[in-house]
Amino acid sequence: MTIFNWCVVCFLVLALAERVYERRLSNRAVRGENKMEWSYTLLHASYSVLFLGVVLEHFLWKRPVCVGATLAGLMLYGIALVVRLSAIRALGRYWSLHLEIRPDHQLMTEGIYRHVRHPAYLAIMLEVVSVPLVANAYGMLIFAIGWYVTLILLRWHREEREMIAKFGEQYIRYREQVPAFVPWRSLLPARTQRREKS
Image (cartoon, rainbow, N blue to C red; front, side, top):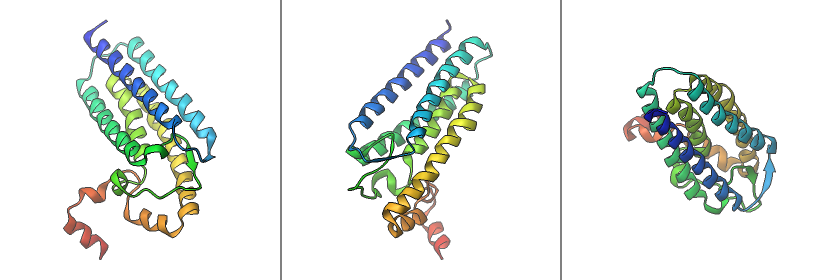
């Protein structure tokens, strides 16, 4: 095995360990009314397929190493990790991998939620794109974008409806002020934002 192969194996082990940690935190969450339970199961199965596919493609399909793709993948994974951990910290005991609405549910608009409405979905999309990039597994990159990201967007669409149903006008105002995934308003200079509002 080459040094690059060992690096890919170490990365995948660390990525899986982070996923196990995240799942343990989610299992401790305050439970609520579960929506779209099938999506949770399908996303986890798809994640398993993605990881297995990345390992198989990386080790069975011999191709030259693209350091640029690997570095881009590592950068995206690092961003995904920071975004996810920020969301977990902001939500605390309400952090969950399930789409849940709780009776005492409060709209979170602090921390990372000041910049994006759905940081967990953003982190997942970045992660599933980054993993195949790190391993130079381009077939699985197509799978990640075509299948996995599509599932996340379907779930996001449903969560938007659930949030409007729960919070009504408060969520609609929040949605008008804060983008779903890309914190573009946070990146713009304040003068540009003022011009945009007028």
